[in-house]
Image (cartoon, rainbow, N blue to C red; front, side, top):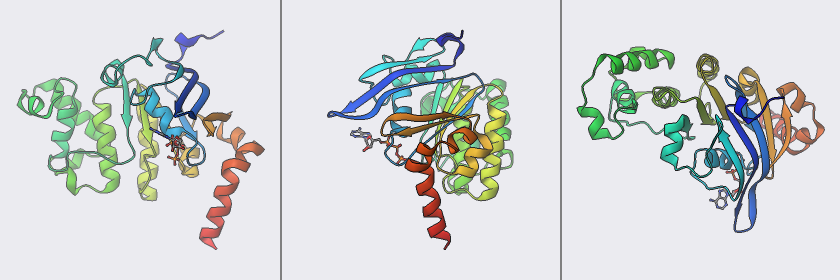
Length: 258
Ligand SMILES: Nc1ncnc2c1ncn2[C@@H]1O[C@H](COP(=O)(O)OP(=O)(O)OP(=O)(O)O)[C@@H](O)[C@H]1O
C-alpha cells in the first residue's frame, strides 16, 4: 500500500474558512512524481485558494499538506519555495525593463535580491542554467530582448522559466494559457510535458482542449470540495461534473458560437 511518502504532494482534510465561509472544505488529493494534475471547476470553487494554501500565501484552518513528507502548513512562504515548490500566478510578472537573460539570471537561486543578483559574477553555472532554461521555454533567440517587448505568451513562458531555473520539484500554474494563441497553447502543452520528466505540475485550467492535451489526472472542485477525480474521460462522463461545470460551459460555448 502506498503512503504519504510515495507522493510528491499529499493533501489531506484541507480546510480554510474565511469568516465562517469554507472556501476549501475537507479536501484530500495526492500528486505523484512526474504527474501533471489539472484542477477544474466552476468560478469560486476554491481552486486558486488551494494553490494559495500549498504555497503558504493563505494559512489552513485545518488539515495537512505534505510535500515529500514535509508538512507545509506551518512553513513560511519563503521556506516553501526553498523546499522546492514554485508558484506562478495568473498574470505574468516579469521585470519588463530587464532582458530575458537578466530576468532568468536574477531568478537563479544564488541571487535572491535584484541588486545582489546583478552584482554577482556570471559564472559558468549561471550561464549554463540561463541558456538551458531559455531553450526549454522557447526563448533562446530572445535573450537580449527587454521582457517588456515579448508577446503575452512569451512573457508567460519567461515566468515559467524564472521558476524552472530554481529547479522546483513541484510547479503550480494558474491558467497558464489564458490569452495565448492556439499555437502558443500547443507549445505550452509540449513545455509542460518536457518539464514533468523531472518534476510534478499542478495546473488550474478552464480550457478543456488544453486540459485534454496535458492532464494525467483531473481533480474537479465544487464549493470547496472534491466532486470527482480521475482521467479526463472519467470525470467528463460523471453526470455531477456535467451538471455543475461542463454542461454549463458547453451551453455557454454554443451560445457564443451561435
Ligand atoms: N482571502 C479571502 N477572503 C474571503 N474570501 C475569499 C478569500 N479568498 C477566496 N475567497 C472566496 O473563496 C471562494 C473560492 O475562491 P477561489 O478564487 O479559490 O475560486 P476559484 O475556483 O479559483 O475561482 P475562479 O475560477 O473564478 O478563479 C470564493 O467565493 C472567494 O470569494
